[in-house]
Image (cartoon, rainbow, N blue to C red; front, side, top):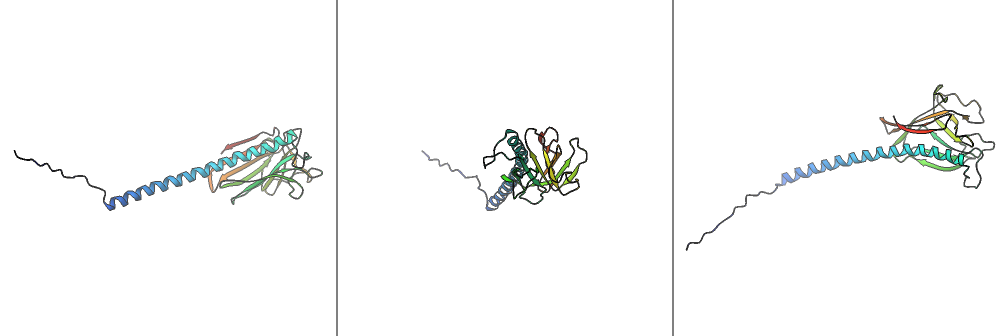
Length: 212
């Protein structure tokens, strides 16, 4: 008998050090690209939430006023409730929900006398790039630097007080103007292609929010 010996040669090759380094570099590049994309999407989503929440908070003060909900001191403010917001291009931007407690009510935010429901900070890189006040039909529009939008029973019609900008001051220096239409434009950082608008109708008091 003769014995037969079979030998096997390993033809499989492993990765070289250079190949491993190249693979790791490619993986790191892909991971960082995905992370940057995720962060960008997350920030834009926060911007969208900021816009929706602003519209919701305007509805909130409107509903509190029409429902006769008392302030934290147990009494209903004679001038109802409102929101104060200014143009802002340096984050973080904010706005204030207030109870109109002036006597007599002047339908504008006075920090020293009005009650503060809540001060809201925008969560994302949200800028208030423009505020426009106009007649209910859209005529006589003018840009302003700040606006107070307040509501008091029994009508949902907004009272509007504004300062600065091209729009003429309210005709009555002691009270806000009823029935004005307000358009607030928000922008995501410096990107003019990503904007959302909140609009308060002058006659109906309807509040809408939409992408530009």
